[in-house]
Image (cartoon, rainbow, N blue to C red; front, top):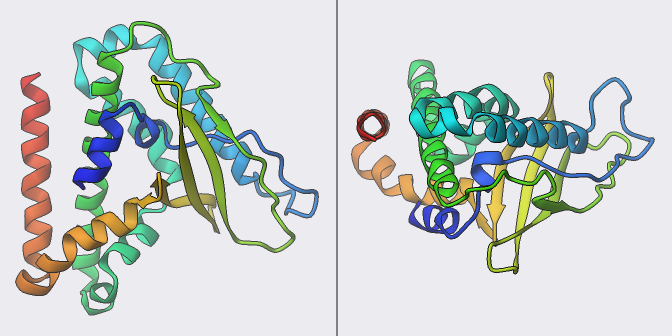
Length: 225
């Protein structure tokens, strides 16, 4: 997790914004389902505009930014799929309630971690965030395709570009993101590797309890700010 945190602190608001692309889907895509690029672009623009219009509230209350992330961004993430991948073989070994508890705590961890990282990023920005902050490459959504990687580039403060890959798949509720890679570093792989030893040595319940404690600590630290 340290690598992701360092990447964000170096100027990426990727995990706070998480979504954007301006490519066009092909005509072969199902017209009844909103194309992934359109879904991501709308969510990104909405998030940027919300941040810009609530800067004063965000400065005075950390919960405001967390609320925006939860309302605008989180509905586009597939936490069940992400949790399955992070838990790996331990997903099959877990009871139903253990899976529910892990998903809940993993979701809270990401929400609080990314909200805090985005807040730190915004502390260094006096001007509004531009809506074209990220450049997105067109997608080629083929007929019947249910999984695709959306590529993008973020221009950092230093002027160089940082590659971003969004892995999305089609669900019953539309296109959802289940993994994000920044400069080749996958969120899913990072957390999976980070949790692997604890899964093996301490067990599922111990890891869930550990995540719950981390979430409580993050909440306490945010309330002190």
